[in-house]
Image 1 (cartoon, rainbow, N blue to C red):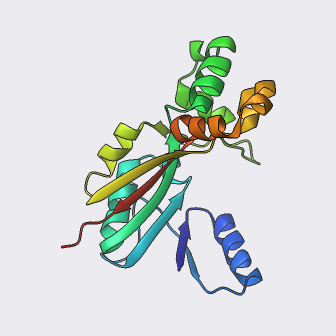
Image 2 (tube, rainbow, N blue to C red):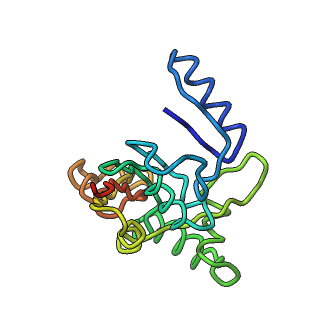
Length: 187
């Protein structure tokens, strides 16, 4: 297992967690858009909630493809632009009702409200549709996309009234996360 992140803090947190659980792994500061590994180095690339913060998401995906062995798998999560969270919280509540769309783009609104920063920083935050994700992963041999993560709390007081099967159905269609499972074609 090799972990890479842009921030020394995240690397240190990962190292400590591995120590607590007596696991072995290597950790290095690195950039998903320019991975410091030879071609065909890994069987699996896992990126959960990372590349939608990179300036060039497609470049990061190309790097994932490059470092995977033929038949290797990329499991990646990005934010879903067709989610209830995006349209309800970002566009309608903050953008239209709160008036933020008069002075900001949806990406700026997400940067202010989606990601927490202890330093008050405003990270780059992007959301994608399934069509865009499928296009970005086009170099892979196969690409499956699942929609996940929708909580009762997102519906306010009405959330507790939703039957579990309805909540699950909504989550599989309008959840905040797109989970990509892409396989690099074998030669």
